[in-house]
Amino acid sequence: MPFVGCVGEQGDFFTGRALGRTEGTLAVETSGGVICSGDWIPRNFLGVGQANFTCDDGKTGIAYFTYQDPRTGTATGNGLLSDGSKLLVWSGNNIRQFLAIDPNNPDGNLTCANSVVPIG
Image (cartoon, rainbow, N blue to C red; front, side):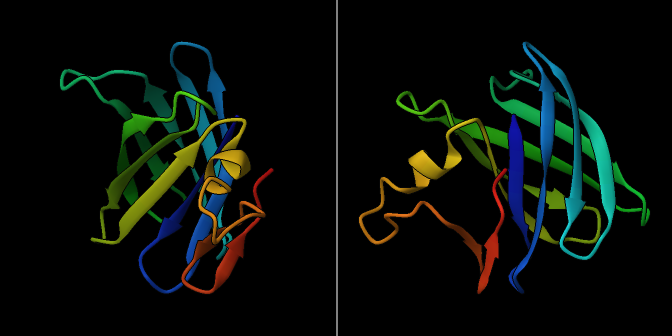
């Protein structure tokens, strides 16, 4: 399923896929061409989903999924890169439908600052 997100506040983003049913792997590419991969679990010891990953530029990151929309199945959360950059993350097969709930966003576009993120 798609795994997308915003990095920092300058409009950088990542797109990729999370694979697996009850836990699995993930692979993403940032808008700057950095490749990151890792794994995810649906619930950690705190009861939230967690994704851990390492990037080919040496950075590492962690994201926590704290909400899953019951209507679309979209999981949302936030995280942090090892350089201190904040992450906003979304995962699911119906991310556009989830985002379109906002009446100001009828097309369900995900934007990071002024960058529109391609959701596959």
